[in-house]
Amino acid sequence: MDISDNIYNTTSSSILGDELKFGIVKICLFSAFFVLGLIGNSLVLIGIGLNKGMQTSTNLLIFNLALADVLFIIFCIPTTLFSFFGRWPFTEFGCKLAQFINHLSAFISIYLIVFMSIDRYF
Image (cartoon, rainbow, N blue to C red):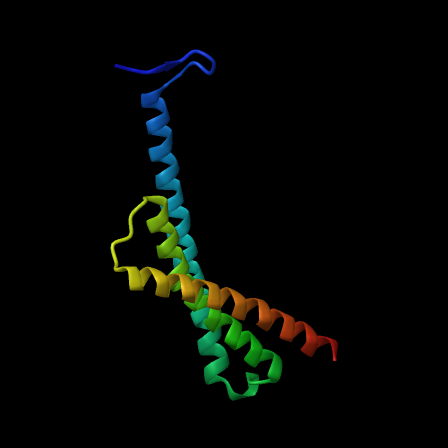
């Protein structure tokens, strides 16, 4: 039995289909962000880490920013995907640890951008 809505002329089955499509789009976008972010930041880490000539103060701040971004990508994207689907497969400690690392890496990124601005100014 379909539940009809006279105002918008929609049924519950079309709403469920839209939610499924939106969920698939979310998974695809977050997967792309995960892969591209991990590859890009890893290349920055490898490039600065292996090339001694690139280890200036600004580049070391960029290196640390890439490291914080890798932490953010590894913990934030899976946590967000799990929250989209309303379930957490790990323990309560794992949930608290993931949230702590999410917030920590975000704050580290913000502070590193501030430090880079100060470094570039002076």
